[in-house]
Structures are given as structure tokens and as C-alpha cells.
Amino acid sequence: MLSALGLDSVAETVYRTMLAEPMSGIAELCEQVSLPEAAVRDALDRLADLQLLRPSRETPGALRPVSPEVGLELILRRQEEELLRRQQELALSKAAAARAIAEYTDLRPGAGTDTAERLVGLDAIQAKLEILAAEVARECLSVMPGGAQSGASLEASRPLDESAMGRGVALLTLYQDSVRNDPDTLGYARWMTDLGGSVRTCPTLPPRMLLFDREVAVVPIDPADTRLGALCTREPGIVASLVALFEQTWQTAVPLGADRPQDAETGLAAGERELLKLLASGMTDEVAGRHLGISVRSVRRQMAALMERLEASSRFEAGLRAAQRGWL
Image 1 (tube, rainbow, N blue to C red):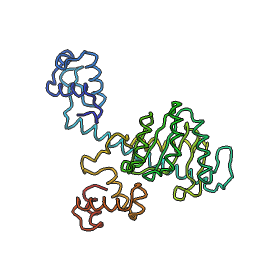
Image 2 (cartoon, helix red, strand yellow):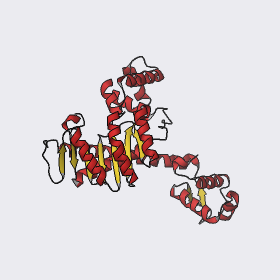
Image 3 (cartoon, rainbow, N blue to C red):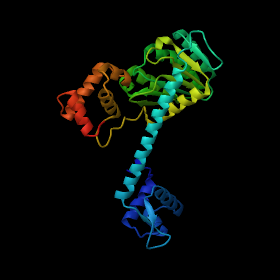
Image 4 (cartoon, one colour):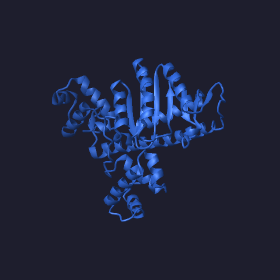
């Protein structure tokens, strides 16, 4: 029950037993939970690390359990602080990645340096990806925003992904949550996981990127206009920033086989909360849909459902009530 708070089943059992029998020593605990002394001591160390045990003021050297009202609240507070820290790091990484990519927008077709090459046209991009896919030795990290992927894109990727996974290359791919509703993209993602790849989804994603062995990055010159082509760079600073951005997004994403959890307090799914934030910031339905990788019709359907839950007759009223409830 308390695994989400960092307690395994043994530590939770020992904690519950100590709450019921706070005066128990090591020997009594071993007998009560039917576990060897080493396992009980490991559980006590874990509970002490989580500050669910404190030194006894009556019996020197003994430990007493902290009440759940106090101890579990402290754990939740630490988790909230850690989540806030990660979100701040993610925001900084996004900004750094955007600045790094912007420095190369003045590259022209055919121009290149020892560390950067501009790729113009789908054929040039596909040819470069085939070379990089053949050379990759350890891992390939991918961010695929925009919701459902085109059939042509999936078919072009299939032989490259299959060959890489056959050589033992780790493939980690991020899609938007909306692909769970697209049979073709969902089928491709499941095919990847069956072959050993790892796929996770997130409501919103950074711009499209491919990272090969943490040494080479392929990103769009302008995420808003892919016709300008892609940039292939080996610049260590840019690649490191993009890798950090990928890793932080990966930590907050949900594995493909798991359901996207709802907020226990508000009952909102992550995508619903993100939609409210986007619309509250002044985005149109069309722009919000592009950010979430869903259609305008889906945006309006989800917003209508949220308005009904908020008992609001207008979007303005819905925004006010969402803010009052702490949904924004």
C-alpha cells in the first residue's frame, strides 16, 4: 500500500508492527513478523532513512515509530519538493536546448562544419538517419511529438529500429499520450516493446529529436516549419543539453503498458490539467491541440467535459473555477 512512498512490503510490515507494539525490540519484531534478523534490520534502516523511526527518549539505543500523520506527511512533502526541483530543471533544460538550436538556424543548405551538418529534404534526412542507425552502438533516444505518426514515417523507421535492436542497441522513445488512441502508432510502439525497446508517453513533449550514443543529435532547424530541414550536430554542449532534456522528460513520462495516473486530489488526468493550463494561457483550440498532439475536436470535447465537471457555463467561468480549486 505504501510502495509509492518508498516502502517495500517488508519495511511496511515492520512499520505496522511497531505502530501496534512500539516497545518491541529486535527479537520481538523478528518473531512477530516471522522474518530473519538481517531482513528486520534492513527494514529498520530503511524506515530510519525515511524518518519514520526516531530514537527513544526513554530507552537509549532503541527506536520508536513516528506516527503516520507526521511521518507520511513528511515523506509526501519531500516528494513534492523533489518534483518541483525536477520541473524547474526541466524548464531550464528546455530553454537551454531552444537557445542552442537557435544558434544554428543560420546554417544554409549544403553548408556544414566538422560538428554540424544541415539536412534539407526528406531524402537527405532519411539517408543520414540510415547511416547513423547503422553506426549506433549503445542506445538511441527519440522524442516524437505531434501525436499520431504518419504511416510513411513508421514504415521508414521500422527496418532501422529492427536492425538496431537486433544488435542489442537500447531504443528509448517518447510519444505524446494521444498516440494511445491511434491504432497505427500504438501498434508500432507495442512492436518495439516486444523486441526489447522502451516506450513512454507524456501529455506534452519537447521538439522532435534523435540522439545516437549521446554523441550525435538530429533536430529540426525550426520545429514550427520542418520544411527548413534538420540539423545533425556532434557539438558536445548541444548534445549534452538535449540528453539532459530527454532524461528529465523520460522521468515524468509513463510506460506504454501503464495507465496515465489521475491526480488523487483533483481527479484530473495529466493531459486534462495540461489542456486547462494551455487554454488559460490564451492559446487557441488549434494551437493547444498541436501542443497535445490531438485534434481540435478532441480539445473541444475534453474542454466541454471539464466545464461540465466544473459546473461552468463558459470557458471564462471554467478558468476561474479551475483556479479556485487549485487545478491550474
